[in-house]
Length: 593
Image 1 (tube, rainbow, N blue to C red):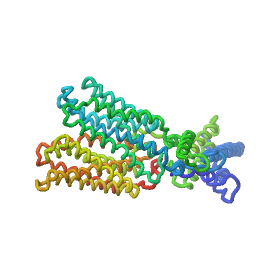
Image 2 (tube, rainbow, N blue to C red):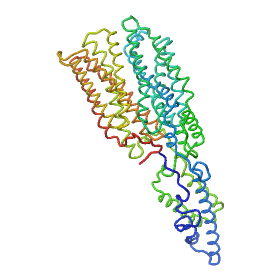
Image 3 (spheres, rainbow, N blue to C red):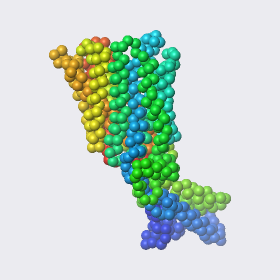
Image 4 (cartoon, helix red, strand yellow):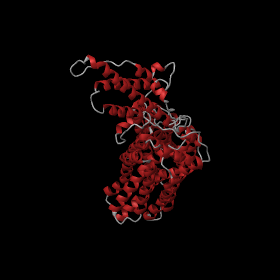
């Protein structure tokens, strides 16, 4: 929660009027005798020295008095109503608003990002062989078509995260879904390989930005209470219908001759287009407005959300997001000492340069700028990757999250790629039966996501570690019942094991999305989420290739599965050693040490 604004008396160390402690405040600086300064010749005329000193002291008193008044004014404005009254922070506002009608609409609109990503990966892989036949693609062209999705999503994650942090959440929240829709829908009409390659990259480029931007937007409207559970809910809204639709399409079209891939691509793009129309009504994140110093716009949006949720805001007006404690000042005494030091240095500089025309005005402007920094947002460039490592917390958090995204997707993509082949070759079943088995696997998501919904509020770190360990056990279970000794292979048990794998995998992603979007301050939240997604997409592109190497020899398949299980276990270490757990706590707006 943003710290309460400091009063001017706290910043200067004294009261504006007479008090018992006034001699330690600004008044003491004014009353202090000023040190004598030498001129360029090393001496002053005795007759003129007293007069010069008196004039300089008068100028200094006037300058310091103006600065103190300016500081009082800034602090009053920070209170929210300019008359010394009290306001409320943004975190207090969202807690008062709660979770209501506005947020339920946002759950559905943000879930479309996850829906689009899943359908892109599953459906395109399903129709790619038919596209290869239609266009007569060579092996390298077929491989590039599949890789275009991961390349596009990696580029989109980085690009749209930067756009969101620099130009607003609303812009990227709207454009990403439109880019996804047009790229996906127009793919159904592609006349040749080059066009469909470009369009699939375009759709993936939009999808890559939807995940980091959507979760950022959703989080910044949420109260701390059960925030993790609500983020898991977005995962469920997106992934369950996406996997169900993908498996259903695979079941309906399998074994029916040539797949009508144009119809498939066109149909799965329609829900994205509908959401593109609806998402334009979502307002800009008020936390983003506050991070950029626009309190008035943030106030307007907060009031509109409160009205839609039929909730009451605290009395007063919304306070600025950045307070002195957010900008690196740890205590009120530190702030007072810094201001006293600047004032004393200023008075000495004034004496030394008294003959320079207009120096008093320049000093006043400098002091005004210094005082105004108490409530202004610090400048930053969100292009620098180094900002994701600023402060001791982020230095530990960012590399752990990158490793977690890589190992989780490496195992998830690998086992997802391997399961259809293992079902076919281990149990000699038809493609239609494989699709049906995978369709049943979707139902494994429901209990897993329900469990994640509750445990995420206990601890982000421990719940993520638990699901990673569960994923490793599930893959080892598949290893035994699908590629283990002949006496232990069992199709029914393989289906049950696949339910557990799909559930634990999706639980991992739900918890990882929560931990990642909470970890970064407002100014770089979408960029931090987007950068982490790059490692996710790199793992997704390389993992199937890894399995293909071992798949050449059936005896080596257990090795590949053991590596996937081991990757999940490796992820347990960075999960439990994340330096901060945000369960029940407000997210940060500035980088902390």
